[in-house]
Length: 430
Ligand SMILES: Cc1cc2nc3c(=O)[nH]c(=O)nc-3n(C[C@H](O)[C@H](O)[C@H](O)COP(=O)(O)O)c2cc1C
Ligand code: SF4
Image (cartoon, rainbow, N blue to C red; front, side):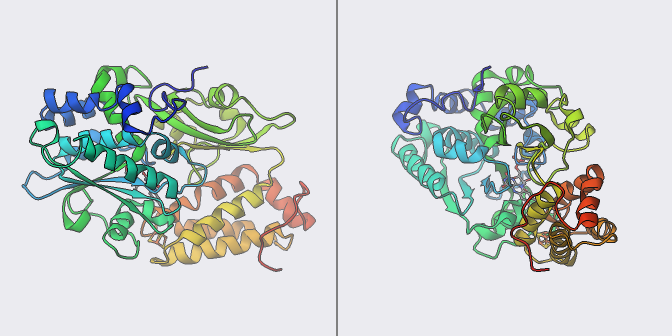
């Protein structure tokens, strides 16, 4: 089974992150083609026709977003979101650590398309290696004449800045990211206005995910029809899925969209480890509801996963096996959101705290019969009432876990222990 359709096709090539090797493999040819053969509006149109959707989680059509930029002559910016802190997702990390020129080429083409003279990559604070690789590759691109003034004699000029955050998940949310990039605490901004209208320094700004922008050179090289020939009409193209859990070959796999979840787990990731079976799957990163094994034939495209009761999200496919205590998993994930809540709004700041408290209590065998309904009540008081999507994101797994595994939660309460025999760890004291 081929695991390297396009963006990861050169992952085994030694030194692919270096300019000379990248160019030996066709690197920067798409940039040359873009500058020589396309007007900026034609590139926006090409990306629109390709149907490329944002790979950061929401799946918003990229060309449509680019089209929202006002045509009022103000400076505009491209900001690439490389904050990637969603538990279970690790695709952008590979893209920037292993093949940074692919992203830089995509950034130059995209900046030319939208008319940006400055572009930024906002890297997750922990991505030391990735940000260093990017900074090194940016230097090489300047030296080769692909960045700076009058790129390849086209009259187009661009500077790229690599910025490393301070390690906060909320800075992946685009408006909090822009606050942080401007040097302030990473709190989300009220929307509208959306960044395309008022973003970085109040100027029109396109924020796109690493994988989204890395797709752009491929689309320029092979055309919109090539891209739409894969996947479905509404979810065309390729997607990198990060697979983790007790599978034989955890890792990043590039799939044509609409590949069945079962194929991803059983063929790409080599199936479950000996003696393990699938209890449930989180298909799109920790913020989305779980899918039960009867949904394994779900095609991995945005619409089908939604119809199956979850979301494709950022493509972090976490496979939970039969030895996993569902209460512990829920407690662990909600705790992540409690730690990462920026505290700006009450439902999220308090709700994630209380849910953690109750889940820890149940896991420790000190829960009571009213606790499950209390958890659902807290979730109800948060759902749709938080300032930004982080609050809702903290609910997806827990609410679906209670729905599908209520028995297991109740057994913890009834037996005052984990029925799977999982050792309690990392809990508050009860
Ligand atoms: C709490 C939170 C965290 C997010 N983290 C990321 C992230 O790490 N990377 C990312 O690209 N998008 C992240 N997003 C989505 C961004 O806000 C934004 O939609 C995305 O960067 C747009 O790029 P795209 O259209 O290419 O997907 C996050 C959103 C929320 C609410
Ligand atoms: S939902 Fe959470 S992360 Fe978002 S603004 Fe409110 S407190 Fe901050």
